[in-house]
Amino acid sequence: MNALSPLAIAREAVARAVAPAPPRPAIRAISAEALLAMEFPPRELVLAPWLPMKGLAMLYGTRGVGKTHLALGIAYAVASGGTFLRWTAPKPRRVVMIDGEMPAATLKSRLAEIVAAAEREPPPGFINLIAADLQERAINLAEPGDQNDLAPVLQAAELIVVDNISTLASCGRENEAESWLPIQEWALRQRREGRSVLFVHHAGKGGAQRGTSRREDVLDTVIALREPQDYNPTEGARFEAHFEKARGFHGADAKPFEAALGAGGWTMRDLADADLARVLAFKSEGMSIRDIAEEMGTSKSRIERMWKRAEAEREAARHAR
Image 1 (cartoon, one colour):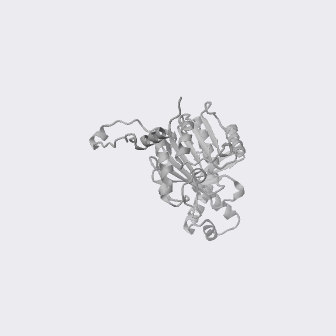
Image 2 (image 1 turned 120 degrees about the horizontal axis):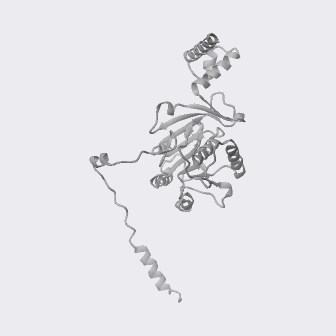
Image 3 (image 1 turned 45 degrees about the vertical axis):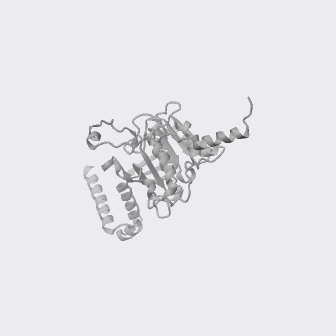
């Protein structure tokens, strides 16, 4: 085949430059009557009660509190159709977890611990991991090229776990709302294509999620992982889970609770029970009601109510015997 002449090459370049852009899909409006007449299937849940199909969610917390343990546990429960903490996956769904921070060896050991303790296994191929350690280059969800490169890997996924925003979504300064827009558009596109996305993020010095609050605008659920007041970094994964945004569920489903990962697996308790246990521990050390209130950062009257509750429960137990 004869090579194109410089003039022909130049003509082709001009033709491509002036070629009309593909038509943009029209924006449609429907009447209120038409909307009310439409029938939509019930919105299924990926993880009950807080993560729906086509749902966008975020969990965040301070370093070392247990975010990756939680994210990996969620991913495995969804892939296996199992339970995790107080949440249940109605059926197995395909999951892709993108990890931008954890060494692959550590990720492997944590996954092995989950597998060893799990009551059920995911179907083959239902959980896939993209580990930063095993890539030839960094992944940046803010870059259109990386979004396109990920598309084939995510094609069959029903849940995408992004752990974490700081390492996988770099675009400008974190406190600039505009820097979030490329990642937000990517997440909305995943939702339009039928996938759910769970973002993992760090908390700032003040305890709120780091950077712009604009991230929360399109999210269905936001879970804050907070350190218990008596938390010790040597404890590892232990946190209070607080639902800061809960679209589509409320009441008991949205109650905060404390969770801790120990040698025997995960344990959970209501925050009221956790606080009462601390009051009893402080009391056993001889602390006064006033000192306990100061230590726990709450009112003296609240500690008094908790102490009276404990005494009443002890008295009821004594009579029951």
